[in-house]
Length: 386
Length: 164
Image 1 (cartoon, helix red, strand yellow):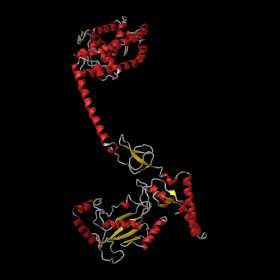
Image 2 (tube, helix red, strand yellow):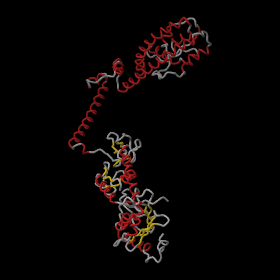
Image 3 (tube, helix red, strand yellow):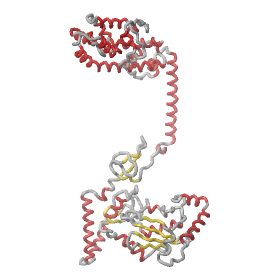
Image 4 (cartoon, chains in turn red, brown):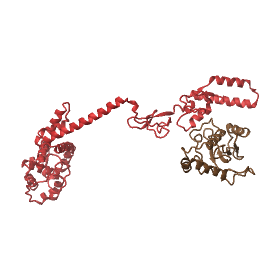
C-alpha cells in the first residue's frame, strides 16, 4: 500500500485498488469492500498512515534490490495519485460520474439527477452516469399529506363533481326551453365568462328559434368552415390575377373549351345557384334546364369543400344568363363576375382587355358582398332544414 | 499467460499452507487460476459424510470480480441446480474484493448447512423442500450417500470419474 486512502467508514485502501474497485463494481452502490457501507464521498488520503509507511521504508536497507523495486513502485503510485489530483480526476471521476435516479412526480419517469435524462437500467443513457442506489420506485406517498389534508382534497373533488353535474343539468334545461340563447344563458350563469368573439357574434346574429342543442353545434362547425373558406379565397386572390393575364388574350374559345372551364368553375356556379335559391326562399329544384351543358354541371364534383355540399344544385335564371354570355360573347355583364365572387376560375372567352381592370375593381367589392352573402347562407341552410 | 497477480499467489500459498478445515483447494498446474476444490458436507446436515467436488476459476478481473464456482458432484440442494451452479449472493451481487477464495468456499460450506428454499435455483427441489422438508432431507442424504460418499479415495483421481 503506497498511497493509503481512507473511506468515510474508516477502512484504508491503496488508492489504485479502491479506485479500481469503485470503477469496476457493477453494483448500484459504491460500497466499501470491507464493510459494504455505501461510500458517498471520495476516500481521503490518509496522511498519518502514509507517514508511518515512510518511516517503515526509512528503516529498510536501500541497497537491497527488492527494496529498490519497491521504492520505484511506490514512486510510480504516488506520481499517479498526484497527477490525478492535478487533473482533477481522482478515482477516475467515479464520484462525478454517478447520479441518483429521481422519479418525476408528474409522469412517474425516473430521471438522472445530473442531466434529467430518462433513466433505464443502472446507467444514464445520456451522460453515462451510474445510478447510485438504483432506480427507486416512487409512488404516490400518502405521507406527504396528513390525513386531514387528504380528506379535504377528496371533499373538494366531490364538490367539483357535484357542481359540474349541476351546471350540465342547468344548461340542458336552458337549451331545452330554447327561448333564451345559449350564449345569454352562459353569460348569466358565468358572469365573468369571456365570449369567444367569432362564436359569440355569429351566434347572437342568428335568430333564437334555431336554438336547440344540436343546431348550436352545427352552427359552430359551419362558422369555422366559413373562416376556412375565407382563408382559401385570399390564397386564390393572387392566382386569379395571373389566371386572367393568361387567359385574356384568347377571345374566342370553342364550346368544348368553355365546357371545360365550366367544369372547373362548378363550385362557383353552385354557390351562385344557391344564392338564387335563397332569394326565392328555398325553391329548390326549380330547374328549367334545357341545355345539355347545364345538366352536366349538376354532376360536377365541387373543387371547394364548402358547407353547401348537401344543398341540391338548382339551375336558375342566372345560369341561363351565363349560357347566354357564352353564345354572345360580346354582351358581357359585369354583374356576372360580381356574382361569381371573384374567386375560382373565370372563363377566358368572356373577358376582353378593357374589362380586366374593371373586373379587378369588382373583385374587391365582390368579396365584401360574398362575406355578407355567407352570413345569409346560414339562414338559408337552416330554413332548408326546417 | 501473463504474470499472476500477487494477490492470487498469496492466496494460493495460504490455502496450501493453512487450509480451512474440511475444505481443500489446489490449483491446476497448467492454469494457476483454475482450482480443484473439495468440500466436506457439514456435520449434522443432510450432506454429512459427503465429500463434494467443485471447480473454481479466477477470472482476469479477480479480485474486482468474483470467482466462478460450480459443483461437480451431484447434490440435492434447493440452491444448487442440476448443472452444479450455485445461488449465492457473494458470488454475484454481494461480491467484494475483500473476500477471498477461502471465504467463498466457507460460504459454500455454510450454504450446505443451511439450505434456503425461499430463494431457490433448483425450483423442483425447493418445492419438495417446502412441501415436505423431512422427505427432502432424506432424499438429500440418499443422494449424498449415492454420489458424494466415496470411501477414502484409493488414488488421487479416485472420486472424480464416477461422480460426473
